[in-house]
Length: 125
Image (cartoon, rainbow, N blue to C red; front, top):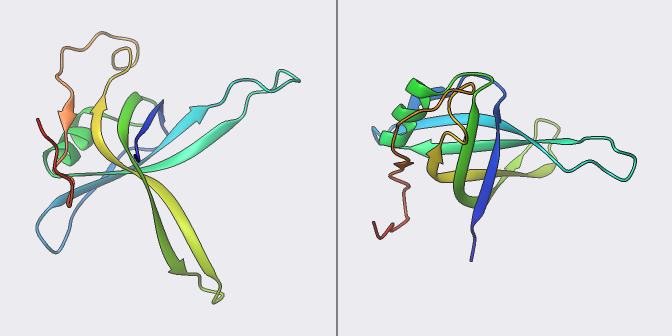
């Protein structure tokens, strides 16, 4: 099973585009803190996320840089050739659900979680 859940903060404003197929695609990056290491130092991971359809528009409308986001989705890899000719692999999350973890910038929000129109995924609800 490929299931991923993460909570972090938007590193930049989400970027909304329309694919050639006409589907809206929104990409964003979450900064997710790890637990402090044995020396008490905090490390942060930066996770690239993508969402599609109605959820893409939802993310672009309601989230901005610095906002917290709770994401559920699946981890996916994409192989590509870098400019220097080396083969590389990029990892990211295809979002199936996005919500506010504790409200937008600390304020309570009454917005229902959004489910995406993820291509190739049958969501039973």
